[in-house]
Image 1 (tube, rainbow, N blue to C red):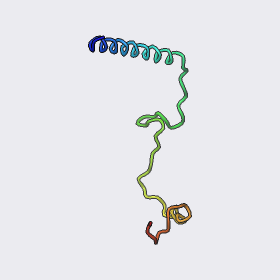
Image 2 (image 1 turned 60 degrees about the vertical axis):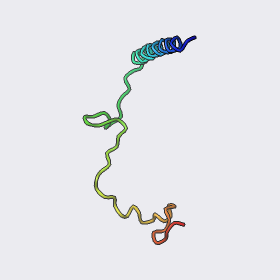
Image 3 (image 1 turned 135 degrees about the vertical axis):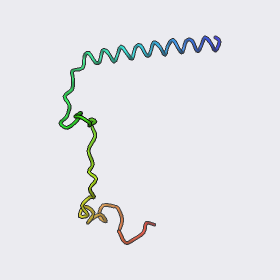
Image 4 (image 1 turned 180 degrees about the vertical axis):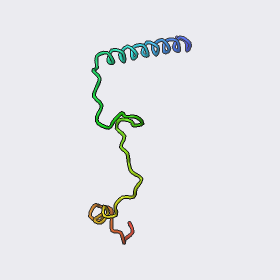
Amino acid sequence: MSLQDDLTTVRRNLNELVRSVERLEQDVARQAPAAPKPPGAGGPGRTAGMVDVPDTPYDSSLWTDSDDEGLGARDRRAP
């Protein structure tokens, strides 16, 4: 086979793959019931799975026992 024949075969197979995927997407869309959205997801200006993080600083009491959590002591340098 020549290079042109190989490219034609690849192009034909790729087009067939695209058509198969499109058919599969249509079949899945027809068979799958509409899944209910979780509360707070998908509202205006929101994306499902996203969590709003406030811009306010964290409470410093969250870090009082950070030495016990494997973060190292505050007054020492790492080796």
